[in-house]
Length: 205
Image (cartoon, rainbow, N blue to C red; front, side, top):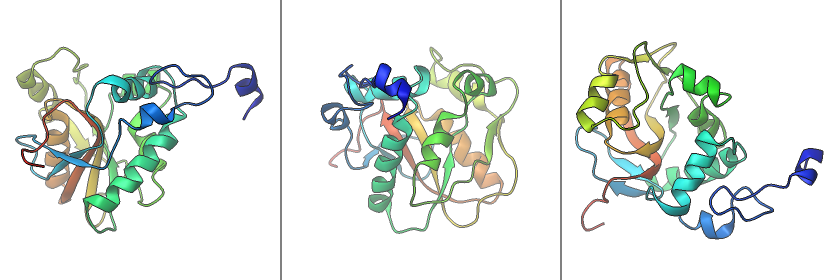
């Protein structure tokens, strides 16, 4: 623990319990990858938790409230999830953030999670072009229009089979736009893994 940590000990971003960035009770909201219904994405989409309760608070704490210690926790969850998604080796491609949002967060938050996954290399090749606005409050159609033609592949496309890594699946517009951009660069996306999802699970699973 750092000297600052001794003065200001960690608190759980899910419930506020002192002493840890994520307590066992809140961590229990996450489980093995569960398939979710996301029309229009293409490859199967898996989520580790529903986007409510402690799981939602942990993601928001990490994404918007500076709880960067959670990258290691999320990285461990994703590493375990990849085993269930299928045999590797995979290359992780983090879903991009708007550049202004990433600056405000001290860097791209999903890239931070991807780098904490010790079982797969990371290819941060996606970026959002000019004109993309914050998607909060947009309808599904507006989200798709917001991203249409604005997800770009930069640098060398990753070799082999990729897994797209995202934080929250809501309408699926971001995942679909990322998969299309990768496909246009000749890259096959085997699966999408999201930390949380607001969408229903596959029936019967």
